[in-house]
Length: 186
Image 1: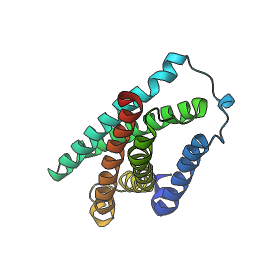
Image 2: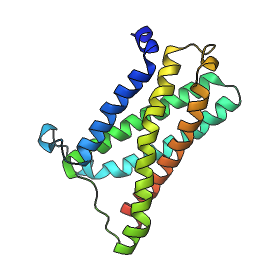
Image 3: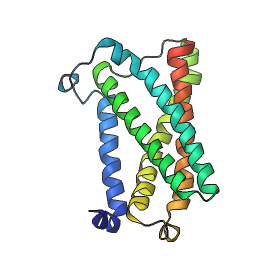
Image 4: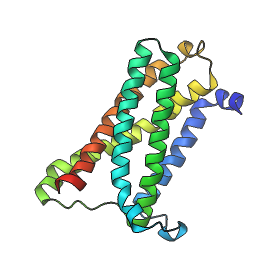
């Protein structure tokens, strides 16, 4: 399988991206009925945004640590931290989708002016960067999975990885701002 994926990294990236975005938009737009999922206790569903804020903060730390590690030539540490980041992201996404399918997107509880001029622009940039980051992350992960460390310099792993890491950091950080506006400030 690894060999097959190696020969079709752009196509595999596209497929994984399409499935991921279909799930996200299907959940956010209400196309996935809440009845298809088992209902967790209310305390669990209510805790998801707070757990996701912690997961995002940890992901910011692991991305920064991964960047630091690769700049120091610590490939094994970089790899471990980026896999942890992806695991944190996947956990975040599963929890987020679960809650959105059951409850719908969170409504902004603050004033209309803050909603229009602060919250919506931050949310829009966060969502746009998250959408742009997904294929980049899949691409660099697939390159890392299908190539040896010695082969990676002959790929676009480092170039695309720098862009993916930067966008991912900004997206996670803006996600923290969205969380703060929804659950801490208002």
